[in-house]
Length: 200
Image (cartoon, rainbow, N blue to C red; front, top):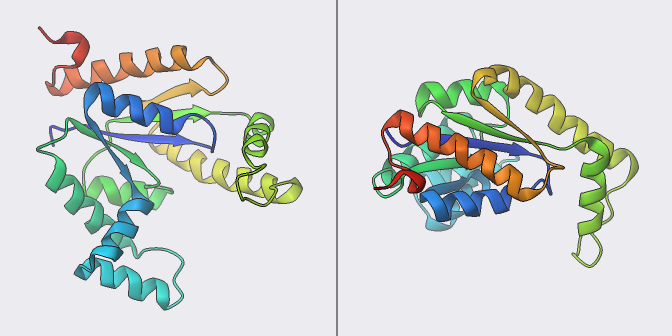
């Protein structure tokens, strides 16, 4: 596949949304948010959508593995001719999903990992909560949420070790953007796509 696939990882409030928007504007990279993709498929009433809906109504908390992979594969294959690449969010979330995605769909070329220490993750989440209609996330609940993310991510980081761009979530956003743009420019050059900064 010529269109590179990027995976973005990070806790809430690490700036993922702003980075995804910047990548779309600069490079025309298509954002693939797995949860949104699932919701749209269910609304559309397709065969895959009905399978997902039946699974969830039957008490399943996750989309069946094969169905998730087929949904992602169909979407990427359909959009690859009108996009310079894809940035995944929400999938893969664990080691098995990562292996399955690369075997069944396509390899992931670059992982953007926005690291934020637990203390600062908690501070940023709680700053967002007042007036947003969310219950307070405190104490053990927030610790457990961060711990689950860290455990899942640890296995993914080991698996993708040589493809990770480590980003400090506490650094000024412009410095983070420059690091990302440099990495994406190099990736595009590697697969033979001209990036905006290298256009004649």
